[in-house]
Figure 1 (cartoon, rainbow, N blue to C red):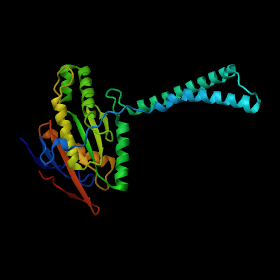
Figure 2 (cartoon, rainbow, N blue to C red):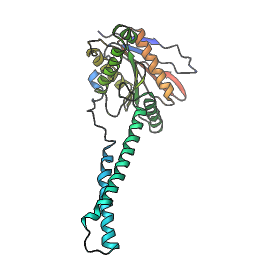
Figure 3 (cartoon, rainbow, N blue to C red):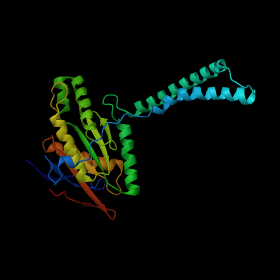
Figure 4 (cartoon, rainbow, N blue to C red):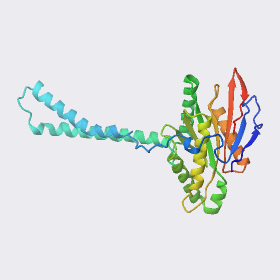
Length: 286
């Protein structure tokens, strides 16, 4: 049964953050089914190291080519003896191996700096960077995007009942479940603890709401390892002109807390419209 509750968010003063209407729902109630959210992306293997594999053969070929030029054009020899290629080729391979190692080491360090060590998705810094980039793009060129914030309901109870190792398993399972739903253009990361943030470019608030509901349903339908039941509460906001990273996240957080106050295992959206430098509340019709 669909349950819709409208409440005015009043915790944040208007001077600090525009107030908005928050609508809490237990299922799709705006005429959009959960399947209306973006098509799930097929996992794509990272190719960041593929070109590094070419360094070794390229180095050997360059060394051999230099040897041929030296003997034929500079020394004027009619033929190049095979042994003449050995030392330059060996040097080329050694240089190529060192270069490859340096490239892979650098990329691995960059990856560790942006990937959460537990869930293997973006960490907070990388997620915030992606959100800041999307805010800048939307402000400059227009176009919608939504921010989805969610956390695990009663996560402390899971840790207390099943242990912290099981809690880590819940977070990893949650990250894997959501990663199988979202698009490859979405930026999904762990914000901290059991809280996650998803940035969905090109998705208006209605599509963000459907995506949030799809994620909520998928998590609730798939127990974590050990048969641990898991539910999440979800908050959704969308970009409006003049938004900053902090303001669009704050509205998503407000919606998240409203979903929790309404009973958890729910998703809520906070919709706000800015016109002529002022804020105007827009209700979401059921």
